[in-house]
Length: 399
Image (cartoon, rainbow, N blue to C red; front, side):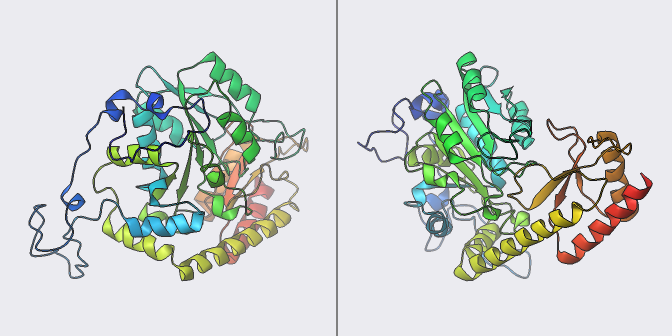
């Protein structure tokens, strides 16, 4: 069965064991997508979509009485240029990465029968979305020991490739594997060689989804986007929420080879990206905005290093754990008895005292696997971080 809207290709698919038509649910492959008015014509006297022809009811109209372009080629062209993709047929846009996550599950995973695989500690919305879609979840924890250092192929919060393969062998109903890189809450990059090991594994017939929400804080060459040209079974998710500082406009994207992108386009809501979001996204990828984004991520990375150094002088906090490749750090609060062990009960008290009595809100992560006693701290402005350090000193003295 051909994918509707996709130009047939005679090029061989890599890896050879992957067949997207066996991954996508049959009802989705057979779907004839809704054809909206703007799919046909964009110019002239437009009386085809039952829009309000007298304009918007707010002073600044900006053409908002018209439905947005469902394809947004200009935005996609700028994304393709930045990420080194061959063309806009490698890009699908969503209302944040969460819409992409939901869409991937809906098109690939049969409810009540098939599953996804996640690697805790990780972003919690994968499991929430699976529950909403009545999809099973297989959990293969990341490496939780720090015996081999932090991150890398075998360090703390690295991907346990052999354990993932064992889970695949034990359960062929796994259709999607979600990898968060850099991880949340770990801040750890998954090496591309570890991702390739799963992509190349013949027993896995599904798709590896690499969530790169924090990739713009990471070193050059860290992104799995470079794998897309060689692997039809990888999908990279990115967002404007983190490095670009545009969480409020809600724009996420899937980057993959054209067959999967076409399936996502066929299945999405016809006007899912609002006109204001599209306009701001186009501006975000301008040369001037990209320069500003890189300047700000450089500043935040420098502030991250400084914060790590400062917090290391506080005796009640342990060394930060994870890879520190995002705009946050994760530090354990130690037991008061001087044992040097992380203490989740104390960490919870510190978290609440900071928020409720000192006006500093961080995130308690002590209930996550491998994160005992940990607080996650977003890298703020220089002034904010000075306050944070002082408040930590004050609170740790009394708790």
